Image (cartoon, rainbow, N blue to C red; front, side, top):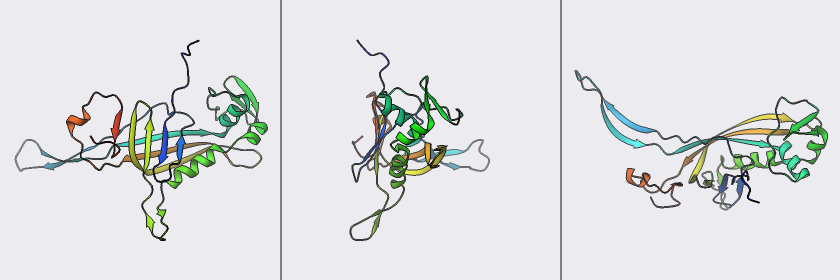
Length: 211
């Protein structure tokens, strides 16, 4: 039977240097793309308006909100489902209510695999210099951001903000995390209006493909 409500492909961020890939646990409900055009403003005396001279266009920027939950991961692994929705952060303190099911908090926390901790470590690793074998430091690693059929961009992390939402009763460790990550493109080739106006569907950014 054809599946009309199959789970969509997940977005991912890859460390280009190491090849390590972080696949989103949940695709964000929306994807914001920021583009800013810079103009020099000349103000001749007595003129009714300012004269604008084009300076440049800022790098494309994607501010992402990434949701992570050890609660959902543990339930998925225990019941073999991938359609579970994130637990309500205001739910009862001793139970989890997920996907019309009720689960004991102690059992879920004991069976969680630690996806929150691993994802947080990976994202943080993109924000610090790389130590070379010679002992010198190099800039933080470049990464590849891919949202299937939407965008593919070589980029760097420019800011990260973590919000810890849920905590295990027995250990106090974080069970749910919201990571706000801003990605900015790395471009080696100039981009022109005509190449942006292609009707190809998926947008390519950065140096992975010549415009």
